[in-house]
Length: 328
Ligand code: NDP
Image 1 (tube, protein in one colour):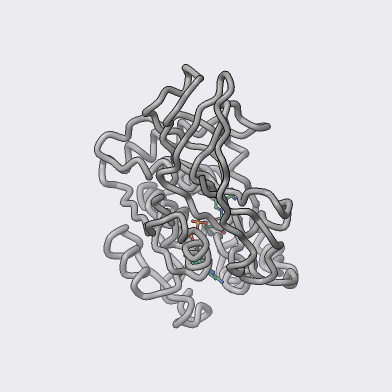
Image 2 (cartoon, rainbow, N blue to C red; image 1 turned 135 degrees about the horizontal axis):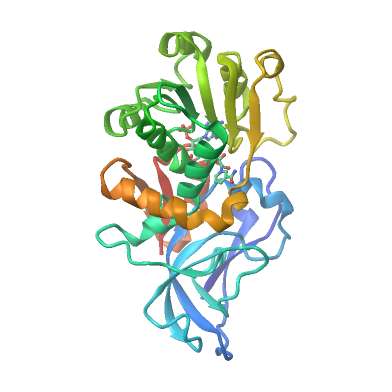
């Protein structure tokens, strides 16, 4: 079995020797335990933002879809697939009991024609994040203008499509024209802005002449500050993430800007854990929309556990479109 150990606290962008790949002996199973073999690993931004709270010397955090290969637990039979927060490891011994308020591990249902890996994305945490964060906090109404940053990523690409389903005009902010073309041509976004090429201050009045009602923010930083100045009074902002700052050594100046006050904006951060007991609602709705073709979903898949680290850094640098996955 192979495991990545968190060797050194990240300083700026993660470096290869911050993690160490080691071999581990597997012990025999005790009663109620089962052994899994990883099939798909999820690569997520929280692995960077949560790292300061991780203990050095422990297994690096992550969720995976794994196959049960041995079992002393009738609730987790051999051959079934489980979604677990087992960390960056190829094999795991578990007793099936969640730690704290975690939902994991849980047995995955059969997604029919759709790939099992969707359990890590549109039918998992990112899909639930898009669904609850957007619907509960942005409270979109038909005819609203919605803007999404990180719009071609795992969460953002789903948010924009839910906004279209709800009858909104949707603008996506992305880091390349290729991503922009994908969200407009394939996902049905109305406009995209490539923040690396365009001047956001100039582009916003062109695509949203009347201002913005709802902002789903995945990135924070200067992009968000600029967008705040283009919100309509009483606009709603769901603060999902601030990836633009995750690799900064020191936090930047306060993100709260005068329009938050003068335009009486409602700006609310959230953690997906708020809706832990309602996940099945989001997953079954996202599944319906995906099966009806109303949500289109893409993955960027890398092969090989030895490529976990490079895939992680590549995602932090925008190398992914849609959900980032490593196939074991
Ligand atoms: P993505 O699939 O969106 O991958 C990250 C993307 O971030 C990259 O592809 C890149 O796209 C973009 N990015 C990287 N650096 C910058 C930058 N400096 N400025 C602007 N964009 C940047 O990841 P997820 O969909 O999994 O996560 C999106 C956000 O949601 C993250 O901030 C994450 O922390 C947050 N999140 C929050 C949750 C919650 O409970 N609150 C739960 C899940 C995710 P590009 O090429 O467009 O720059």
